[in-house]
Image (tube, rainbow, N blue to C red; front, side, top):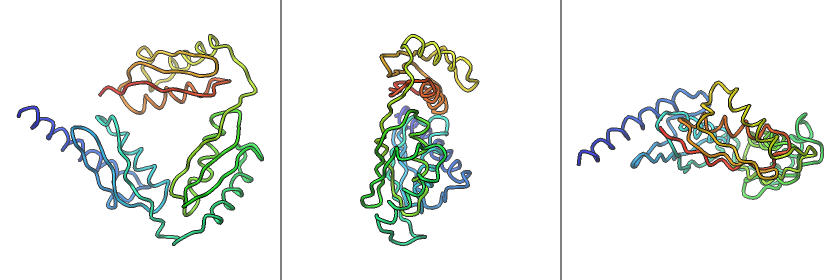
Length: 226
């Protein structure tokens, strides 16, 4: 009974902290988002106006100390623009790619079904893949983005050299305790294992791995221990 009461108190304080962080985030209308906890598991629900607002709400919850996982049940309504046709979203996605200085011309295509964008194509670097996702995520009417762009780097780096570079980057990072993170490199794929104390450290380690030349996949197996 004592453990149950303690867990209830922990959930109560964690829920209050998440609610405060949502209210603190200027790009999120916290009044439209519900927060539920059960044995430390967080679920966000409700309705938002845009896909970026949904992403911002999820990131806000993950920033709170004590949160180890978030279930997403938020629905994008797009009330401000009304119902938009998939063909209009697809056309605007193409324009967004043409205007991007980061996404290589002609490298990425977007298909749209029920306001969900699917990205296909190939690029050299993960940052280009992410730039393509960002270019379409903020388009009016988008409810989600599936990023299936593949990486085919022109640069080849030996696994040993890649591991050395990634490990050095982890050590340099002021937001990360690198001594608890292990790096394994097989071919062009990186696997991170170990323990970090927050989702911020989890993301920083993943970013560091992606920055290495020639990397095509990062398997982030780090555990967030709070």
